[in-house]
View 1: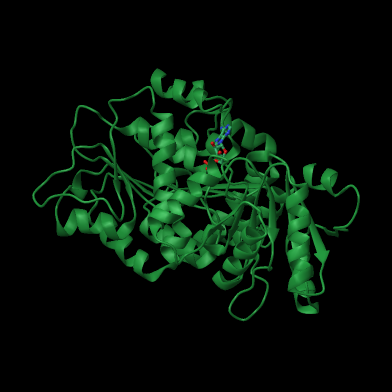
View 2: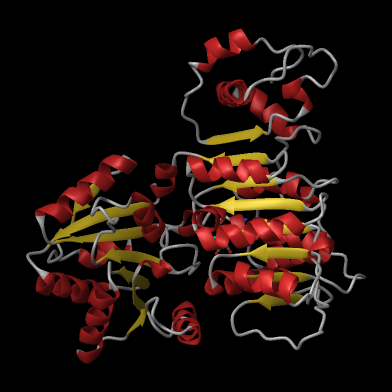
Length: 471
Ligand code: ADP
């Protein structure tokens, strides 16, 4: 790492080289002593934003170049890059550790290994972390949230916001599981459908919810005091920041938090503009980024099937269904196609469920529960389910239509999110794309180029289809 006086000219020169691609990039905001020379040697002018960014790039490069140094940093408990290889090293409360082990976790995932030491440090560090869905982010911030609660204080100290009702509930479920040996930790959902009487005060320690409801409950109804929040988590921060309404609500909430509140932003994708914005509002964050998203696709085999028209696509789906052993999600581009497909399959005696954005929240939850608990093996849906939802046993994702954006161009991010529903946490998964036009084929090729991963032709009539989709 750079120490002492900073030579901006030299940095500029070397900065040119700093574009090396890496798996893992970790950097500490430039306010750390190592980077701004708080050690007393630094007498230069204050670096400009461009210089700072250069320095960050260089820091990044030096970490990338020197795996050995990175390893040393990771082992040094005083380094911002300190990382752990076991949950024991985190010195969690025994009851929480038991909860973690009861969930079947043996060792921390990459993102957990890097994030948890900072999240649990004393004093705690702020963080902006980005990694592909299914890599263990939720488990990481939930563990940090649970560890920070002081159960002798009967009021909310942790506020965790998600963009949707379903994600908030899912996070709550993870928190409930992880804290099953700590019944004294109480959690309250701030989501649609949860009501409180005027004048009432929330006594639970953790609030998990959506931004609108949290804002109403704090600023409008004063059910809890934002000034007493010590941990603020923004899940799917990229979506929150990119969605105007959510962004405004989060900013208003953020403004009311005490200066000492620990802020954690977690996100599955990296959008420069969004991350730049995050860096403005999160003070001195540790930034963790798992790059090379395509690597995360290594355990997902991708195929395409040639079809003439919708009827052949339908036939392909039924063939796949008949050969299926695990659970599958079928993604359609529109609600109309999703309900057409589900109706047709149900009429022909297949057991499928449909989940789309126009359903009521209660219906959506019922469908998801049926699917998660295995009562339904095939779920037909739209992009509403592309993000975040964690269903462990999905082995197959079918793109009935490939995802496209408003310009009808390949929507890489949605594709990644969709097929990321399978192959979670290093398990093997299969993705099948149904292609019924030259345009669809072009999109498929585009996905192949973008992620640098082969999408192979699958002969749906082949005798060993079962073997292929079971592998
Ligand atoms: P993300 O929030 O990045 O999408 P999750 O935290 O939901 O990821 O984790 C994805 C899946 O992996 C979940 O089923 C979760 O229970 C499991 N998981 C998370 N951390 C671990 C771990 N350390 N060991 C084993 N499984 C884990």
